[in-house]
Figure (cartoon, rainbow, N blue to C red):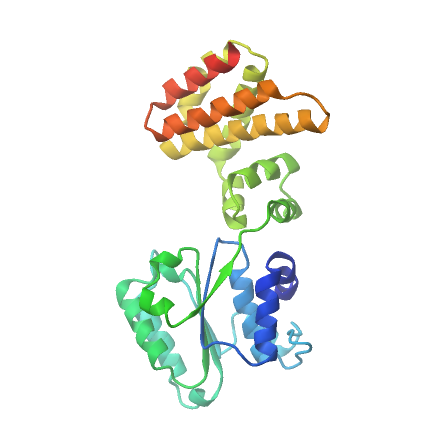
Length: 310
């Protein structure tokens, strides 16, 4: 999907404002794009670069077909530099290399764009080097920093950037996007209940543990809904083996909550009473609170099963 179409659909307010800035030539010299992964930060960075260099721009929209648009798409445009972490961090040598590129003869008079992905991963030396660059820029340039953790960006860097917030994808849009990527409807519904981030949802969907756990919890849910005593035995028989870590334990309760919420919604849609399901949802929420209070997972899960079954 072309960046403009993606942004118009998933970040309409940000997209509209940026188009106005381009139209009235009010672009800042530095932006800090912050928001969850998959919300359109990099699409906006790419759209801006293409808009600036496009040879056939119309209505403040790049053509996506000229040589400049295609070179930016392939990361081959000499005036558009993109930096991403080298291993676990962005290092000072990467920022220095960027400065060297922009200081080459003749480049000072031409527009330059540089994009730093996962900017929160700059190590202290890299961040200080970038700060000096922003304070004394060579020629005409546009700096774009992308982050999903704005609190980890130096306040002095933040103060030199215009901060643009990218809102989480609405649940409906997130489900639609995941289904368009070939993820089944039921899994899509579950993923949307676990996260607002598209990238995180895709990451979870590809996780082997998750794909096994959701089926195991589905079986547990069936036992609990039928008030079957197997629901209590199932905790030790199956759940403990896949709940070694605190994050996994949280996820199991979150998946169970989703199954009960879905059941409740189906009852309400059919005009049926859901008092029992309301009680069960409350019990699961209480179980989640106990887990966060460091009560053992086995104890919390077994007590939950007993209270639902009896």
